Image (cartoon, rainbow, N blue to C red; front, side):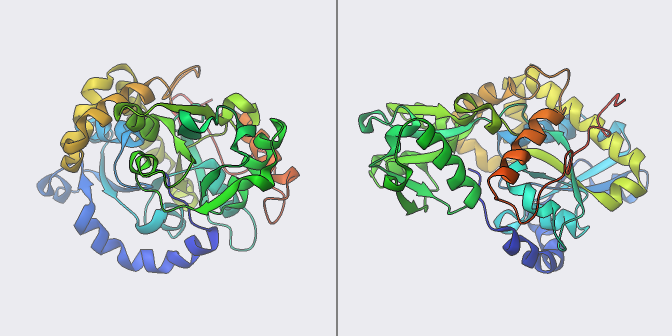
Length: 347
């Protein structure tokens, strides 16, 4: 499940995260090579920060490690997990070269005096797979019907502006949607306890979980309501100084990562096994991981020419929407915050 905190909180975390990196690495890091290999000095070590605990958004990374694609590229990968979604801050502080982030939450980090030196260098998924889910008995089969019902909010201006637009465009009164501060960590339990009527989810994980639990639900995807919401979520970000100082390693890393996600797209069942083997805590959720992997694997490449490509028009359309709705402190420039230059065969 995607968790969000304010950008100011992320920036405050930079120093704390930097100090905590050694502890995090020892406690929750994993590597593509054993200690003897790293000690040889032949491999360049890259730190990769997840956005949250390991899940099927990350399968391509673990597949690339397992299949030896990074080793072939002369790279050893250290995977770390940040506290409270601090990936962008960790990369901005230069304590990780790459991380997983999201276009919507990335936007504020790209502007202002405290802008973070980070750039999106690849799309994990080609399309936004998020939307709003509810029990069918609530009758919320379109955005306008959220009126008169409760919704679990994380109190983000972008989140609420998105909901306001789709609700009102569908004839609903957004002021009559009852906002409840979200404490949801398990959508299935939340619905079974009837603690909230509707939740913004990623269908490839929470939606799959609800279906496996036998819940009868309604679900609608934001990208189907308005194409401006077909933004990139999640993306791979990188530290700008690293990209400038060592572009060859950055390109080699992205090529190996691309091979991993391409493998996962073509072999979802084996890729799920690799993810579980690398993260044994997922074994108890094996059915969910397997079904989630089947769902997401088709979105890794989908209608793009290859994995990782970011369409400038779609990227700019969403940031233009943020500008038009005054959801950023200053306007986001065209083409800000992303590049396709580090993908394999980039022109």
